[in-house]
Length: 448
Image (tube, rainbow, N blue to C red):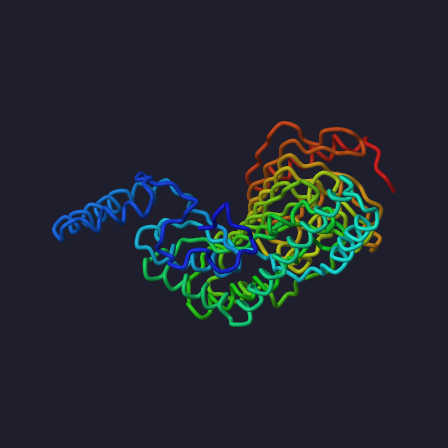
């Protein structure tokens, strides 16, 4: 379990004995430890046995109710303290069985150069000495800079600890042991994943002196490394992963960080289900892929513009996955073959949506809450799409057995293509329904 009071860059635990009670946690007997020690030292051997049995009984009785109410989805950073907690949690005969999701941070601490802050602090100190009088303003600035300096100093020490942890391979060894523990307690339903979020030392989060550092003060998000660690631990433990959960952040200006070879789960048998949560520009989208059901569910996406558009610097209202730094991941999503798709609350240009629906032999297709717009030849192949061509492409899907449409909006004409929910089953109903939609849109104005 990750303590809320522990910085992400925490080094070795402040407790020498991992079985000790965390000093930040409360307990029933609030007497000082010294007084409790004096008390038990004056008990007879028989009384000591009764005390130990009582404590053990209380622990056993409280464990199951506690396990039923504890959070089952846990996040862990690649630092020694968190990995120790992960091993301990998965090794517990009850807590290990209760876990539903284990997510690993992509954050890696990096060294921060404190030279500039130190020089500024020295300059303020000399200035105060030359003026020969303690200025309140100078003292305040000097204290602020020295505070920043020591914050960075502590951070760099934590970075060195994490770096040594990686160099010794303990991050892979710890995760492998945790997966072996889960196999021992027969918890094969736990979801494994990663989260790609600001995961800094709390003391660096709001430091104005570090705002100039990119991509962030004292850290970097190493998505690929975390995937490689996951792969190594899964391979060594032979853990049968059923679901992978990827919680990511979009970054329009970042370079591509992932390659096709990093999608290790594509070579697994069976291929696990994938859940991808993307947060970008304060908007969130979710993609769920069930390989066993040949199904994809997409919620909150912007399916355009095309991958060739390099001018996108921010999302309109939803994360634009085609222009994100995880390009190979989205190529896998986009070009995979499915039998069923559920698209909800999406934005798209007609071209991209048409290419998507034609990329698979869909049997069942649902589109709800979709905002559609035109683009002039977004694929640079001379094609120009509209609501009419979308109907034509949907009609050409000979494998389609059911089609559900609801709240489909056209931006160009500011009209509902289909507002109320309709469900057509069988080719006869689908063809007739799409013909009616096309006939109603035939009088609309389309570009090109």
